[in-house]
Length: 153
Image (cartoon, rainbow, N blue to C red; front, side, top):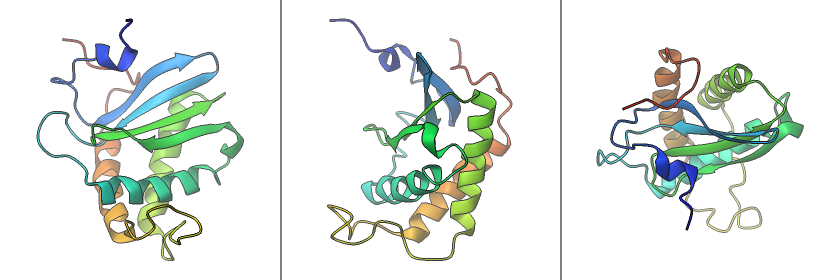
């Protein structure tokens, strides 16, 4: 069986940041790594779910909404995948920072927080999403790797 690309990354040296995970034609998969893998600091389901609702809503209402393919959490609970087509990585990096800031500043109801809209609607918390976004935005504001490549061993 061929190994998938994400299994080829040395997770023991991976730090929080914004990375290009893979490119498939005009679609780029971004690794929005919010936590250091294998360090014991994992996002709770509540955190992942809450950020997912907020970030996906803002992304799908952004100026590049028609190019957003997917946003969702990694099963390992250390980040998110953001798939976008037809956009430059530097622009998606800036968009990601803008969305995080918009979530932090948001003052309203949690998006998709009803039984009609979500299969686990009670497992959502806007304050938790904001806290996660604050921490990740701080990481991105200090990121110096603007090639968005994974670290080399």
